[in-house]
Every structure is written in C-alpha cells, then in structure tokens.
Length: 168
Image 1 (cartoon, rainbow, N blue to C red):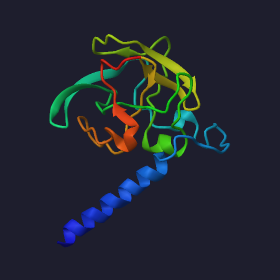
Image 2: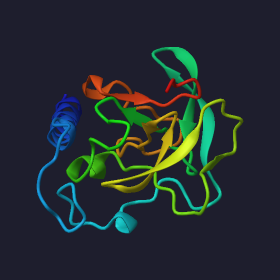
Image 3: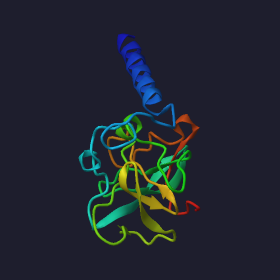
C-alpha cells in the first residue's frame, strides 16, 4: 500500500513538472540565446549526432498497435509539436529542457539510415540548427529513458511520435 501511494505521488509530481515545462506553447524572456534560455544551443543535449545519420527508424507498440517511428542516433523516439510553425519552434527555454530538440551540427543536409519517403532538412531557429522532417521540427522526450519508449505520445494533445509517413 505504501509503495503504491509513493508511486502515485511521484507520478503526480512528474506530470506537474511536464505541465509547467510545456503547458504554455510560448516563451518569454531574453536569455542570452533567445527564447528565455541562458543555455547556448551547443550545450543543449545533442540528441542526433553529427554529420552521420541522424535519423533511424524502429518499430514500437502504441495503444496495442505496432508502428514504425523515427528515432535519433541513440534509438530514442522522436516527436513533433503541433504548435510549431514552418519557420519557428514553439518549444524553447524550459520546454526544450523536457523536449530536447534534435540538432544537426554537420555540413550539408541530415541523413537517415532508413529509406524515408519524406524530406529531411534543417531550420535555424531559436533552438539552433534543428532537424525537421516534412517541415515538422523533431524533438526527443526527457521521459523516454530507453529506446522503444513512447511516453510522450499524445501529451497535452500537442506532442506526437514522428512517423515515416508524417505529412508535410
């Protein structure tokens, strides 16, 4: 009984942290690097790698169904955020701490180890050189600790796993 209550409290605290970090799609403030962040983009965890393949795919189970999703070089599931625009991320500052952007630090264009039908590109925005797939900026989720996890799927009705068939 004590363990169950402790787990419920810990889960509630975790959810509260996510709501605080991403409950508002906009940020304000003037940190040295824009978007309210005082952390330079190069210091933010690079969830993608360098000029090698930054995108991979894997099959996961979401709501009881097998689905192919995009992953970063570490095998962690990638997500897109519906409030993002074609020219700017709506997730920066504190939000980007919970949802680390997928950066591209190489030259040329990002590549995939899988044969993707969509377009990989890079958008220079408030977070830095962020990878996008079919014009959707890509992020990892701090709540995914291991490859194959999809704990961010559907959070706040705004975060969704990125799939190879994600339309532009």
